[in-house]
Structure formats: C-alpha cells, structure tokens
Image 1 (cartoon, rainbow, N blue to C red):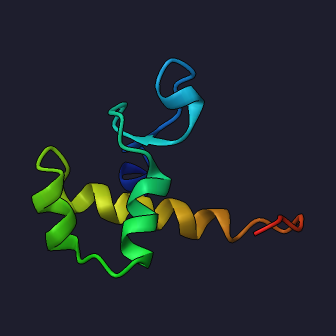
Image 2 (cartoon, one colour; image 1 turned 60 degrees about the vertical axis):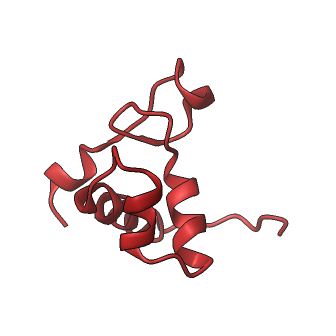
Length: 78
C-alpha cells in the first residue's frame, strides 16, 4: 500500500458528516466495505457507481487494513 492509494480517502466535515469518503465524493468508505462484505464484486460496484474506479475500491481496502494495525482497540457493540 502506498500513500497515493490512501490519498484517495478524504475526510471533510462538510461531506457526509466528516466520515471517510472517496475523493471528496459522497461515497463513504464504509459503503464500499459493506458492499464488498455482502458479496458484491468489484465489477458490480463499478457498474452501480460509474464515477468510481478500481483504484477507489482498492483504496478503501487499504484504508480498512491500515485501521486494523492500530495497537489500541476498544470493544464496540455490534
């Protein structure tokens, strides 16, 4: 993972209440991760959201991977 991938993920308090989004668009990282975890393929996501690219999907995965590398964790309710 390189920084150019992660630079696609933006946090702007004016967009989606400050949630991480893709390139300041209204597509949140958690939306893409939810779609992937529900079994959507990259191709299906790109068909449904034509303004996204394969690199955007990979950036979401890289962002999620980076978040799991923190050394301090808190239990969350699921």
